[in-house]
Length: 509
Image (cartoon, rainbow, N blue to C red; front, top):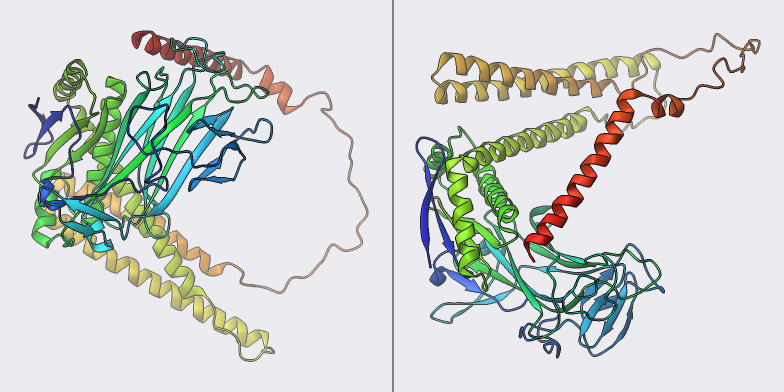
């Protein structure tokens, strides 16, 4: 079933939001290649304790899983080992103790996928990946080793256990471009009583090159003596969806049109994709908070249409709930608020990156050339140093002035309102003045005068007696009225969060 509602984003732009009850691809399936499982367990026989038909996670070997070890291509880590292990590989599953994280990393380049319905095989390249990707993950989990479980298995003691699924998209330098985190506490057993959860991470930007996938099981009782009380991973898969066509950079007109649609002035291509990805992530997070994790992905298409994808097994009631939340977001203009927040954050990050690049550039310009002669007169060195400082200051000033002129011209061209024009120019000038202070780095390490010790052989007149021996900072803080109130508020806030979690669990039955 499909519903269409409209979310207003500014005077010129409308987003239509489509809610599906099953997963969808990037756009038209004819333009997209879909891979099979790209995790290291691809091809592993499905667990005998699972009905999911997902690839299994346990290899032929069984036994303890030590911190830093590798099993079936996955890296095993934990914060607390019990009996020198994070968990155990046994009975076709990976069993967690106090905490256990199962991680896989790999390249997104060179992955084979088939387009539909022609079933033609395509191989991912960096140019194709630059057109945007989608990672779809499914996991099968047993989570019945806590005292409130209706399935009662293993060591069913302690508070409710939880498990977390994290997916990340990285560039060639391991910078995180996009991430998705889902924390669940769903009660589940084996086979017909297991839970299969689906998650999706969509990234519209360029430079996607690697992935990082991880599952973490947490023992709710946090026992440091009893092992294997946490959730168990029965199966896992993650697939890559990528464009079959090479990515073509946006034209100047397209950048202009998208800026007008977003209500921005001069976002570049990279910033545009960061805004789109950030908006998708923000909307997805808000929907998941309101619907208890029913949404697996949110995608913004080229036509400014937002596609919301729910899990394959989502019931009509769940889909109706998603629709209800979307309508509420529409009435309260939530998406418009999220859009403004994302754009502000992207612009802030871009300014920060520009300042860092300028700082690096100034530092390089200020680097003194290697001296061919070790011995030189102090007078000559001082003269060269002063000239170098002057030269670098002039270069820095010219660079800043050139950038200012370009920015001011763009403001005059884009912003016709005189008050708004002046306000923006003042902000830009203030940023430039702050950035210009970086030129003080030119003086670092420079000797302005020859040091001379004039206080040699002085009498030791230090008095080490303590005037306030019975007064310490910790005693003062402990009895400070504001500090005491702050601690009381923190305790109340913690209690509030615990009650909210308990209420959420009661709602889920």
